[in-house]
Length: 244
Ligand code: 5HY
Image (cartoon, rainbow, N blue to C red; front, side, top):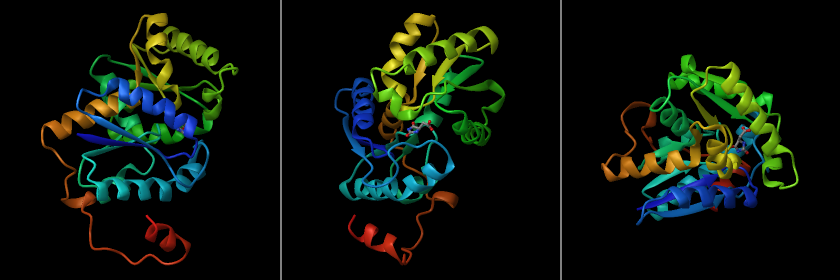
């Protein structure tokens, strides 16, 4: 099967991090197509960045559909554009945030999400409520800019490490969820260091996508994810979409 893993920000180095995590998780026979959004913010840190990342993300979902991808993964922890992507996709579309939350609830009663900046927290709180996990989760910010995760010389890892220690001591956390696609490479070492499950959403999303495809499930087209008739789009977006 082919799974198209889309980084909705435009930083290729982060897509490479995501691709490594996806390929490490993928089963034999699963082809991972890791894609960097062609247009939008270099990183997504809050509501405006999320909104500005949507055209690039949805263009790449449309391309994947035309190319016959079996499933898509949205590799941004906010699950940016997830419902819109499901509306235009035939196969499953999995957000790495939702995937990580589901994985955590299967192995722990309570978990703490360690994300990047405090301004990213409300969007994650909203998602946790939407998915029904808000009573089992705490969210902390390590105060690490997203792109610092790609800078080996930054103190990002130390800050994430310290926040995990606080979560285990203060939140009754039984597992940790890494709240950014760029943290994927840290999961195994942090889990060994802290002696608890540390979940990366990229790997969780790839395995969930594989499961759904293997079981023959596609996105339901009854109700909210019904694709609907083609819609005229005017203005600069029209030319962007026409090129895709
Ligand atoms: C992500 N931003 O996974 C989110 C994390 C965040 O560019 N990729 C991003 O901080 O919202």
